[in-house]
Image 1 (cartoon, one colour):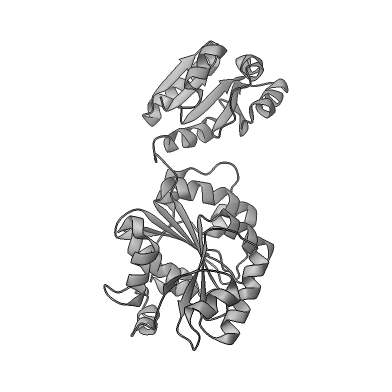
Image 2: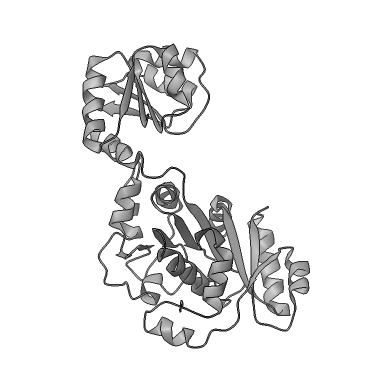
Length: 337
């Protein structure tokens, strides 16, 4: 059952069930706290009425995500129940009906979250932005994909993909909002070209608002098969946090002594363990040297691609049907082939 509503309150029932019907999702309404545990794990979204919050909390159900305490003008005790249940929020109905409608719209959107891949240059000019665009372009031919610009000093991914004039929300608009962001609302709101969505800035003066990024990324992976982050090299603590959120982190570096030395410093600053790989660009050193200096495994080698600079200047993006970037995309995203 997509939604589990645990309540005996007629007012909560009347506020929630019609919203479920409008969103086209099924709801199991249970007025017995003990019986509700049978569906606790399997429901995609759990709504615990404030009237039964104490009874449910007393049973110590297993911690899980997507639990909310709901009530019509819930009192202070609702917040205590929320803490005991590990709930994400207390929803005051009917005032928060819009928020709940967005949450219900996401139910059934995905059976599992999408994959979050971060790309960062080990040194300036390594080609990380080019690779991020190529990965997103390649995967978007197969499934919904979002390319996210988190580098305030970057060229602007919309310019590389000729999407500057495509209507849609940018970082500035999202930073002016608060609360939960729906996956469908984000997917349909950003500039899109087919299955490829793009999130970047509208202005030349840019600032990465980390709290906004924290709100956006969960919605992004709920609504897309793949999310690609073009990460900032000079991000400091923000870079470390974003890298830690990624399922896979790709560090792009030239196979040269200066390039690998700079990459080693960036890797040490990020401090990420596990699923991090080195994408090697042409240079005088080999794979073994690169792995020894950086401590990362080489997961792909991307040679120079003829005409890529001209393609980027014309806003066509870096990807061509054949070439080093297409081969790298197939190797780095094998599950999508």
